[in-house]
Length: 204
Image 1 (tube, one colour):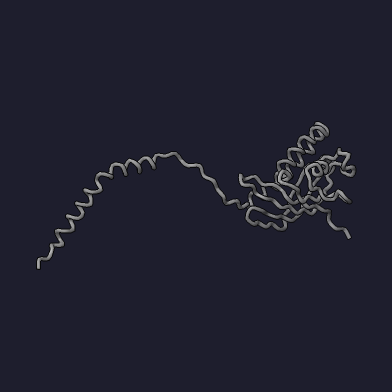
Image 2 (image 1 turned 180 degrees about the vertical axis):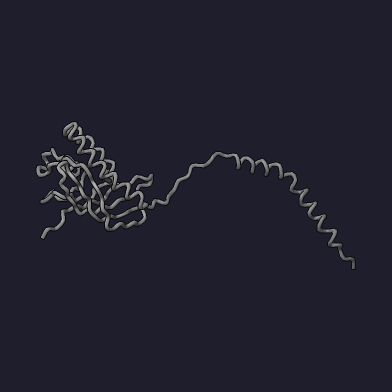
């Protein structure tokens, strides 16, 4: 019985394989080169988690917007203030998706809860006969707005905060309100308020 020389077989097999693959090597290299030179793809990030920094920025933005409405009222009257407040409500709140759980500080009776855009706008600037109790919280002569958080809960695409918002007016009078907000982060990154509950400190 004649046994094959395995030491000689291995090199022959390698040579044969290289010979068979040789015809496709050029094409494979061309495909690899093309793949490496393709432009950077567009990336869609589906991780929609809201961050602490985004929540704090949204809160600061709310304060800044309130002070801007007040300043615009002082400079240009109700027309200018209402135009600014309209932009603020549309950008800061989620009324375009449906009702918002908005309970402002100075509201009572059937108009305690402002689930629609018109009710929110009336609270901020007043001058709406449908809401005769509203004097326009945002058109008061506010000079500063400061937020003191007691609790911040981050839960995926939403966050809830609870604490105080402290306002100072032109005379130096300080008003502190208890505030709870819930924010949601949209797919394209914007943060909006879907719950806003305010009340004055209990004095009993």
